Image 1 (cartoon, rainbow, N blue to C red):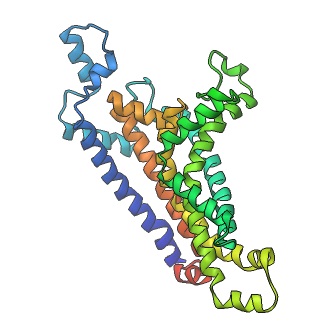
Image 2 (tube, rainbow, N blue to C red; image 1 turned 180 degrees about the horizontal axis):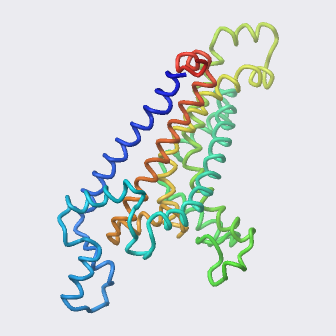
Image 3 (spheres, rainbow, N blue to C red; image 1 turned 90 degrees about the horizontal axis):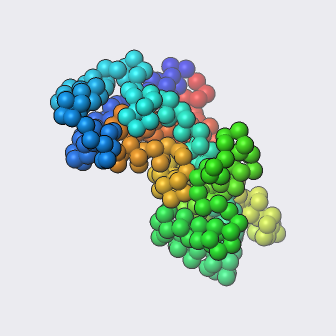
Length: 330
């Protein structure tokens, strides 16, 4: 039990604390090196104010202090759970993240499930039909998807389904001009389809090619040769031996791809003007809202770290040898 607590509670907690400290320092240094003046972004380009008012605004946000002092002050407040106040939204950073995170998690969750299910299925089909036209079609399609950037896929989908066919809205999370109380679940689903589809397409290729390779390795093993000698063929062979043995490594890869999913969501949200964390992060970075940028960065770091840790724990539970070594049976 002590081994389990150390390996899976204390050690990860120490790692994430050090990681978040390092990430926050790097982001703070980079943000202060961009040359963006947060006060100018705060008051707007068309607003004329006196020098005294300018200095007062700068002092109010602590921008009159040195970067080292500001970072130390930010860390001090962070220890008590205060992430600061967003300069753009005029709200506490945690309140902004809480407002935006639901939309992003729904988008990423749907895309994660779709990419995993579709990619794994395509990989099984390609691996089980090596050398056929299906295998060639899936491989070539995956190569195209791997090479295509997220924003390009998003623009193509908008052009086809929104401009040419007119089936789906171009962006936003709800119809423009509608009150929140008037927005129906169907409206939200229609606005979610294209961003979720864009994000899922980017993850399909990797899992499909990986699964295909695993299926090919499985079909070349000795126990598959023995199964074929017993008369097993086609779907029966794939179901009994291929799916089970390819699913665990594919699942691990799917969990490990959470960081790529989070990065892709930033671009997808920008193209579709989807009001999630990604769009808020871009806005904070371009407008010099350092407290919000730091808060979103720490949240995304924690999110990715938890995804990778979950992958390790799932793998340890599913693989008996790893499970025993990791101390889950202690």
